[in-house]
Amino acid sequence: MAPKRALVAIGVLAVGAVVLAFHPSRPLYMQHRAVEFTADDGVVLRGTVSSPRWTRRPVPGVVLVYGSGRLGREHLLGDTRSLVWLGFAVLAYDKRGVGASSGVYDQGWGDSAETTLRRLAADAARAFDALAGTPVVEAERLGFFGASQAGWIIPLAAELTRRPPRFNVILSGAAVSTGIEQHYSDLTGDGTRAPRVSDRAEVERLTTSFSGSPGFDPLPVLSATRVPTLWLLGGRDESVPTLASARVLDSIRAAGNDSHTVIWYAAADHGLRDVDTERPMPVWDDMMNWLRERGVLEASR
Image 1 (tube, one colour):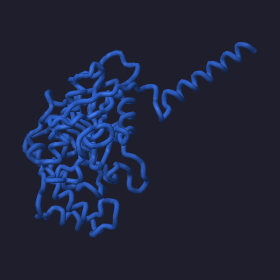
Image 2 (image 1 turned 90 degrees about the vertical axis):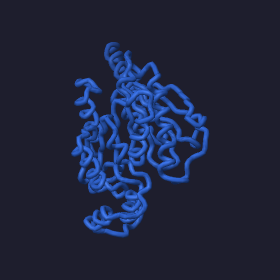
Image 3 (image 1 turned 30 degrees about the horizontal axis):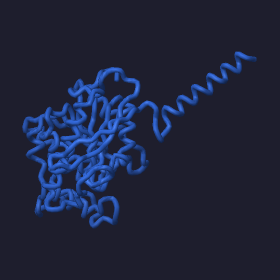
Image 4 (image 1 turned 60 degrees about the vertical axis):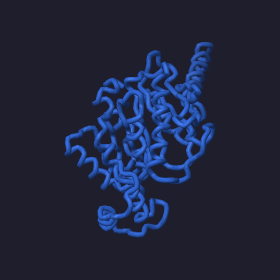
């Protein structure tokens, strides 16, 4: 009977270890270190570097860049956990004026879209430099990861880092101007209110023929970058005009710059979930395959 009791005890311990390792409040496969860094204007930004606990050698790293809104590191906890599980060290920080970071939070576009985006991009670049100096990270395999508004911020930030990023991953980002994106959101209802125009073909026509103030146009930055950039776009996104964005990226490739790769999920919304089934798109698998193809990750990873 004693051996059986021993086996039962071992089984209980094993189950307990698994529960602890994957417990949603603090998974044991992660370790954390508080960091702070200073923005160009003296604002102190505070965040957390999360990394795989049992890795003995430096790992690839990503800096998380936010979409719009008053967001701190806790809002990207799901992405942080997924990326650490996939083998990355992750830096998530509180936006200026949010959480533990000093400074004033930017309300909307403020004085101008470009001024706000460049300020946020400078913050992201300083975060990148801070993560590059962390011993757990292999600086040659460091990049940006972000969604929505981050599609404008990341390419700007990549111009400001001390060393160029090895990769950028952008989910549901816009490659069109802020003016066009706002016009499109007004037509569709931005996925949060009743649309002004319900016919998709008419929405695309009105978006293409937009003649208002462009705001910030990312085309010059996107055309100049040589950082391999993966765009994961949803065909039924009601916040970002992904068809118009795909056309911009196609035109950049046609002009001889092959830095941009687009993966298109025809049935996906802004959150990259199937509109009809609510199932998530294979974002993580597609990202990992793309990174392996470019030598950022080992083929076995």
